[in-house]
Amino acid sequence: MSETIGIEITELTTNSVKGRMPVDHRTVQPMGILHGGASVALAETLGSIASNLIVDHTKYTCVGMEINANHLRPVGSGFVYAEASPVHIGKKTHVWNIEIKNEAGKMVCISRLTMAIVEVSK
Image 1 (tube, one colour):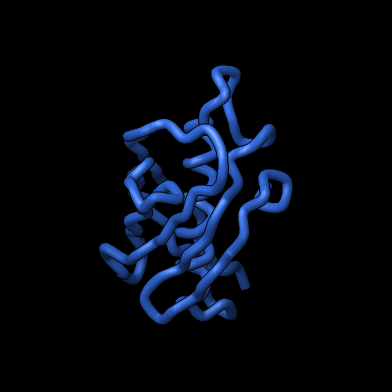
Image 2 (cartoon, rainbow, N blue to C red):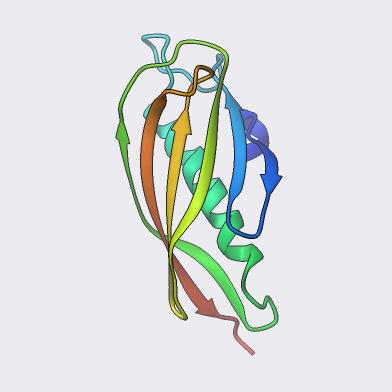
């Protein structure tokens, strides 16, 4: 999905994952503004990458368990920029806060993602 809607990872740090997504024909709803589902896809992509970067892949994999999003302002063109930051890093769950902003740095969407940390079958 990430490739299809143009999500790009722009920065990986020890405490966050950043990315961007175009607001274009692939990501807008019929009214011509950013589709809420596209924002959620961006949020879950960044949070999923973030969780999977910090677990031992020989023992665990991370899968989305719950996500919510509040859409705060419309965007009609350009790019949106997102950053996933940890709220809780536990043995069985990770919780991420994902802020999505427009090109002017104004908040577009705030999302929280819970990831389940699942043991890999042996």
